[in-house]
Image (tube, rainbow, N blue to C red; front, side, top):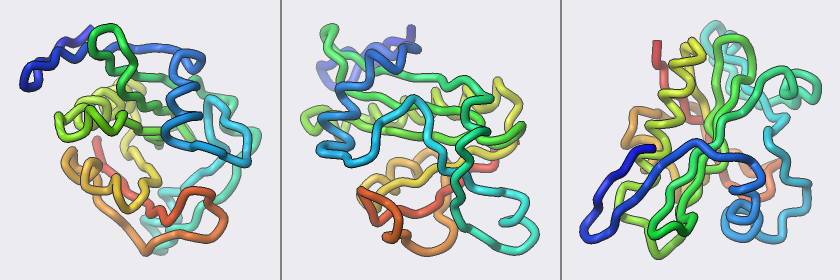
Amino acid sequence: FVHVIYSNMICEYSETTFEEIYDLWNEGLWPNRVSKIESRSSLSWDAELWEGYGNISITKQKDTIWKYEPTFWAAKSDGKLIGVNSGFKTNDNIYRSRGLYVSPEHRGHRVSNMLLKLTINSAKQEECRIIWTMPRKSALPAYESVGFRKIGGWIDEGVEFGPNCIAINEIL
């Protein structure tokens, strides 16, 4: 547990489960989502292609995603779940941050900042060298505040809640 006080609000951060964060993802982050919400996403980004050729395309890796266990982070205030994020490896040394969401009434208190730092720390503990994500335009500033940088353009095709971009943080 990590406790942080934000202007009259005590926020507790802890590792949690997919089952605990599912409702917040389903109702807040991805309301009326067409595709099934799973504990991991099959979307993958190939850092080797980006480093060698500047390629920022996303592919689907249906089998690979089940090889690595995800980590889920929760932010709670007064025992109520107010923010979540998850992370998991998409290959042996690349990690993905996925599903960052903070309830609207708790935004502006750096809750997303702490959730992202915990996710980055998980990537470091799993000996990953890059953490990547696909934030919406509105969420990109939160990612940039902890060291992510946008690469490439905005992606609107093939995503339900776009436009999104690829953002990376080279951590090792």
